[in-house]
Image (cartoon, rainbow, N blue to C red; front, side):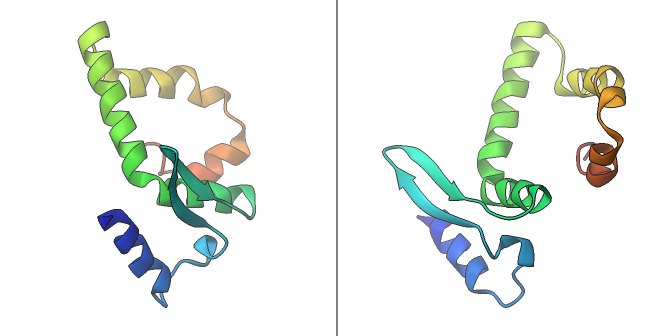
Length: 104
């Protein structure tokens, strides 16, 4: 309930990021979180991250805890491995657009 009230306050705000104008989070339906996303791929990515930020953070925490327990390595180990192994093979346009956000 709090999340819906907070989201409503943000949506009413005059300072709303224009990338969010076409997006909404109507609520849960049969246990599923619904989001409506529209726009360019960059806008959709921003909308997805903004509207599901808490769920994404919970997922990262759950996965990192599981990996630490099962694989005996912390989250930083896997981030570093991904950066060294996969990141060099990502298309330059994606690297340029996401510079700084992925490494957070």
